[in-house]
Length: 328
Image (cartoon, rainbow, N blue to C red; front, top):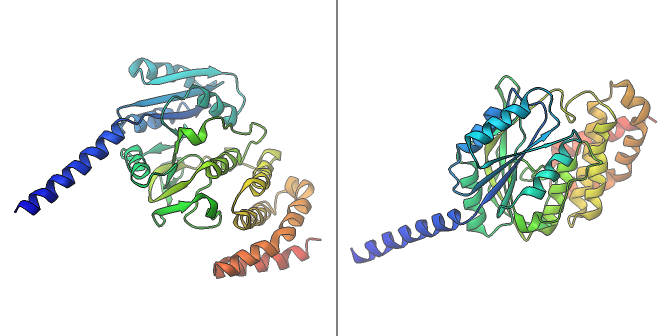
């Protein structure tokens, strides 16, 4: 009986200690907002439903013209933890940078204005960071359309990941800033590349990986990613979309995991060609360059796929390599 009581007391003390550690940590949430009047309330409400004692919500109005600015001011009046920063329209990278300059939390999170999160999102991410002494913890997402229909639920294997062995092609990998919680100490001084319209968050995430000692993947979906058909990453191809490959070129230069980063870059080249093969503007301006980049790094991609027994990808990439021969 004494042993059982001792074990129970020890368990209670461990839970109490975890609560104390969690309570002592503050979180700054950065929400860039541009013409999001139809979704911003859902986003903010989902953040407020997370019962975090020390929470700073930084909304950055990036020159909205649809009434989002007035809505943000109403949220600020409702809850003093919500800060509103108004600025001229310069894009999401500049808006996030503005938020970073105002952030004072021990941990930093990014949530897009058209997305939302589960009510246990911050608690679960913070618990894993504390338990595993991690610098970054990320989760998976529900992919939804604008009508609220769940198109896909992403799951993965939970576990610790070494930053020097980060596998950019793994199903366990993450390559965006939403869906993650970052220790302020690794974010401090970093900024999003404002020259990039797509891929700026992937490059930022890669820089954070380089600064980290330990990363933890929480293999369950808790972030609701809403696919906006008119966004820079999903709309019709233009020069802005090509900046995604420029971001990956930069990641290849800085990553400690060179092989997987280069393999991921080559795979993104393949995806860009496949996704835009019927787009006249892409074919006239970017097709030849993108195909040349794919073929340049195809041997690295092939070696990675062989090494990691990714047979399905190996087949599709080999078929695509043959397809590119007819494009020249």
